[in-house]
Length: 177
Image (cartoon, rainbow, N blue to C red; front, side, top):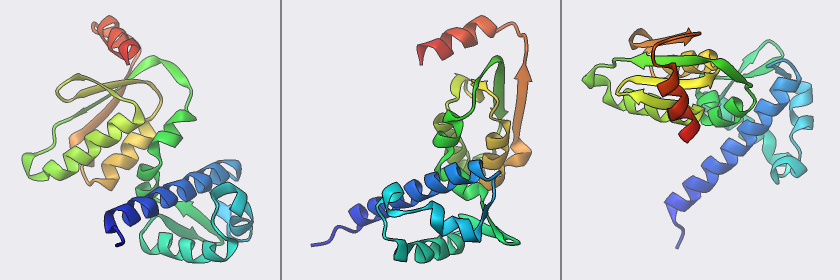
């Protein structure tokens, strides 16, 4: 008997792997991959997917709003970036400054708030207080993308602190992780 949950997990895993490859290739080509180079840059060695399946995968990604066309190029959407946010974060160098996120999202948007909180954890944020999160990487672009994706931009504040009265506390929390 076929387990639909297992098949869904496999499909999600493959999608994340292919999105990760697209992300790597996009950073090589300046965030956009031309259509001609797209199929050439994903091959069987990269993701163990036959070359003949790649156009179908790309079609599905477009349908699922993971990629969009801009002229003769393909761009990852915010939704796709949320799928591979941990891979994006690994490429961002450490900062000496504290990058903080604070939010107060209404109870009626609980699902969006929970998705946003999970994304903050995947980015690498550490919870300092109930709605205050910190990291020492410049990830403002990712926070903005997450806030847009979960439709909570009006309730999220991102700021960078060179010095505050809780720097030592934040440093200890970050070092524990």
